[in-house]
Structure formats: structure tokens, C-alpha cells
Length: 418
Image (cartoon, rainbow, N blue to C red; front, top):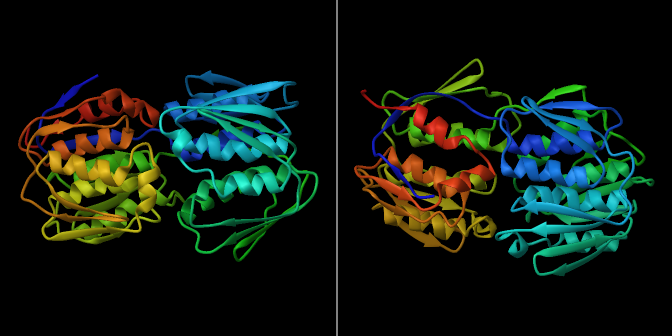
């Protein structure tokens, strides 16, 4: 559905929903446990629902409640083919692919949107080397075979999700395993989130440098009631709105010591010149004298669209580097972010692996094509806070992938000075 957004800075308070990244991990750990677990999750996005649905197809019993999920773990994988509908969720696919092998399930992943075009290498080769059979047929990915323990080596500069999936799967195997990461590890904070979830589940996965020694025959033991913390990735949109507002925006419901990599938004906004205040479980951001900065996209790729909006009205030049992986997201996010800024009067040069953005005094109104990308739609809403004319987005419903109540929370903010 098309949405028209009134221009102007916003101010107010928002309570952020549960972390999509942590919810994936905790649901998986709960399903791989031995006892029933309540996973408290404030807000269930399409991606989280996809993981829950896939785990149910693998034999878990997952009851959706008002507060989140009640998870009865997998006791036995269903006989025959398991159809796993992962939608457009890359996390669901990449986390569960090695787990399907560890469980010895015969499964078919049903992929939607751009997900069939997003890479699986080198994870697919590693899984084949250790007992799995994988076959792609259009949007379908057929999986069978029993994953076996042993020595696993995978590159660290492609996707942290590959490493996280293996870390969650290998403890299930009969034999012990050694997981080694070659080269630099990008998005290391996301691997740290997985380690936190496994530690909370009382699994033993000792780490030695770039290697994990993983004993087999382990089961997860999450606390019987586990709460998913607030989502820093979605928080970033409102904090960036605050950076465009003299009165500021406050986001509540956060873990200020979280291992979520997108907590790095605070550092980038401070470097832009915004005023950032942390207090209790909340952060307030207000506009300062914004100026251009250099942004390394490798640890915070999901933040680049919305940080580019801030950069578009920051004095001077902002350079976004190490961002090639953004071309493999729900849209080609380097191209779609550049198109968003240009459509609204921003000055941006698209590079092979980054962006060069020159700040302008203000954006003007215009039409934004989201390409069904949730982060583009929410970035357009942020851009309205720095615009002088109305902005339209062509598909406001795409935010359901990660933040179903985004427009409701956005509408709760008031215009600055009102």
C-alpha cells in the first residue's frame, strides 16, 4: 500500500520491540532443548514467525502467545519430507540449514523474494563435505543426509550467519567437532550474540582464537522463561530521527550492554555530531552540528540505509566503505539507498563497495521505491524528518518483515515544536 509521509522533524518516545536477531537464536535453542521454554518476545515479525514455523515443521511444538512463544522442543524429527517455509528470511535459512543436517532431516526450504539469489557458498560446500546432500530447484532447496562431526573450516568474510548456524548445529552431533574460521571475521558481534545464546543454554563451546572446540551430544538448557531484549537494528531508525530533531527522540526497552552489533549506531551518531544520552534502558538522541564521517559498513551493514539519510544532510562528505555485501540483501542496498537519496534531492555517488554522500541543507519531497525492502521503507520515514516536502513510499507493508508496528510507532511521534 502506498503511504504519504508528512515532512518535518519528529520528537517523542518509542518503546522498541524485541530483537529479531536474538529471537531467532533463542527460538532455535529452545527447540533444541529438553524442556518446555517460554520465549518472551515483544513483537513478532515475519522473519521471526518464519523461524518458528520452520522449527514446528521439524518437530517442535510452538504455541504463539500474547507475550511471545511457548516452545516444546524437538523430540523426534518427523518421518518423510519436512517443508520449511522460510519466506525471505536469510537468517532462518542459514541458521537452520546446518541444523537440518544435524537432525538428519529430509527437508525442503521454500524461499521467496530475492532469497533464492542470495549466496549460500561456501556454507553449502562445507555441509556437503560433512555428509549432507543439497539440491536447488528454482525457489526450492532440497536437503538430506546426516551431518557428521569433525573439522570444519569456513571463511569469515562472507556471512556471520554461516558461522552462527554451525555453532548451533555442531553440539548436536555424536562426534566432537572443531570449527575454524579462516581470514577476517566480519560482523563479529552477530557471532558473539550466538555465543551468548549458547552460553545461556549451558552449552560448552570453548573458543581458542579463531577456533571453537565443540563437544558433541549436547542439548540446550535455556531458562524456563527467557526474555528477548530490545532490537538495536530497529532502534537505529528512531535514533537517526532524533539526530534530525533539536528536541530529540527517546527509545526505551534497550539493553545498553547488548552484544548486538547495531548498538554501534550510537558511536556513528556521536561522530556525526549528534547529542547522545544513555539512561537506564533508554537512549535519547538530539541534533547537533552534523558533519560528514567515514563509516565502515562491515560490522553494521543493516544500518547503512538509515545512516546514509543522516549523512545526506550532514555538512561535508560522508564515505561508506566495505559495503559490497549490501548488494546481496533484500534489495541491492547500495543502489536502492543511492536511488532513495537522489529521489529526495540528496547528492550521492555509488561506488562498487560503498557510497560517497555530500550533505545538502535539506531534502525535498519525492517518491521512494522500496523494492519490497523493509529497511528502505523505514529509511524513507527517517528522511521525511529532514525533508521540506511530502514523501511517498510505494509499499509500506514491507516493514512487517522486521517491524510490523513501525508505522504505528512512527505516528506516535509528534512534529517538532507542536
